Length: 252
Image (cartoon, rainbow, N blue to C red; front, side, top):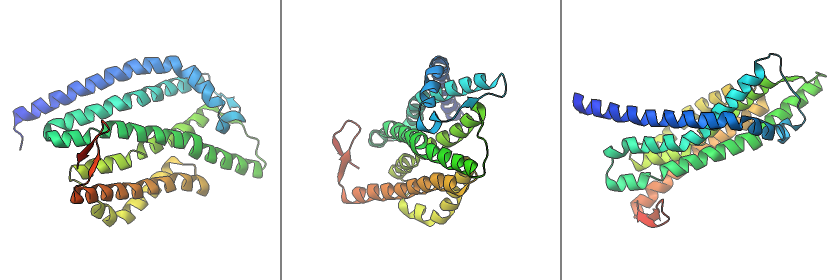
């Protein structure tokens, strides 16, 4: 067990890394606020919003959306730095070999984060909007959408799904450290399915199609995580080489 001096050292290092991440976040937030008008205009041209008139029902609606957009831009650019500092913080507890083999976590996790954003923004969210709009037209409703509600729905779908796409990278990272494996994941599969269904219902509109469009990708990501974990352990048992972050081969 660590003594009090070691705890203080670890907490001090953690504080320093958090400060660096927060400073970078503040800088990117300023850049995000500057970029917000262009980002919002780009989103307005996408199929999910092309036929929708954004209305504001309060003088503050536009300002809040402007700030939310800047916040998400800052989060997007801060994620890679935060991932690096997570790896760097646990680095002292790893051997040189383990550190080399887990460094890939940073670029892989960020790549999956970007894929999650792209999937949720270009696939899942347009499907939801299309279905919900057709349902409204079916009952003869006049569609008048508040800008604030539109973006609240957008953010509540895109951001959680983007984080969920980190699942395979996190599972592989834990598998490499010997903390997790496919056997443990398979044992809790039914409980994870239930949890993912609950999460899917929380971040999607209350209709069956939207719920499935979110829950099914989450379940597929979990199954992919099991496959990736098993793939790594099989290669470890046979001593087969894998690609390292620099593109070369090393042994697992």
